[in-house]
Length: 108
Image 1: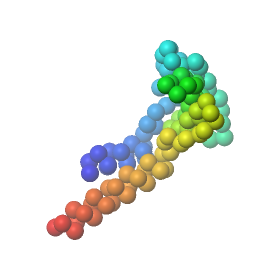
Image 2: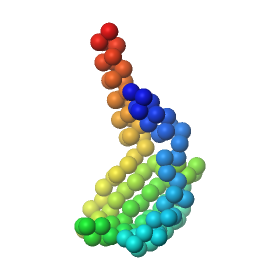
Image 3: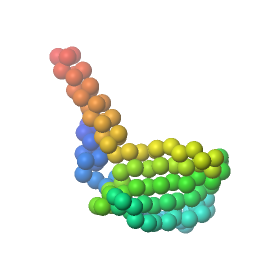
Image 4: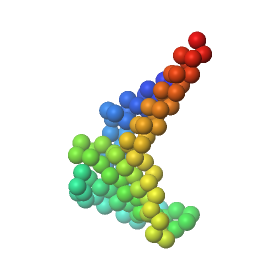
């Protein structure tokens, strides 16, 4: 339950990750580039790297306060997958906290 509260707090108040945290990835051997550009909501970091499956492009989307709100992955075959979405994560942890709190209350 404490970890849920911590996760909820972080999702509400912390950046989780900032564009500056990603810059070091360009020094890794399996990364081809790290690009930054402005999107509608804020900075977008685009990173191409090579993994077991081939080349993958990651898109990290930040809001105007440089708080991460979404991570997308695009594989070399064109498939796109959402890896992180702040609101989804927040809902998941709120639901988990609510149900664990309900279970404790009903056990008493």
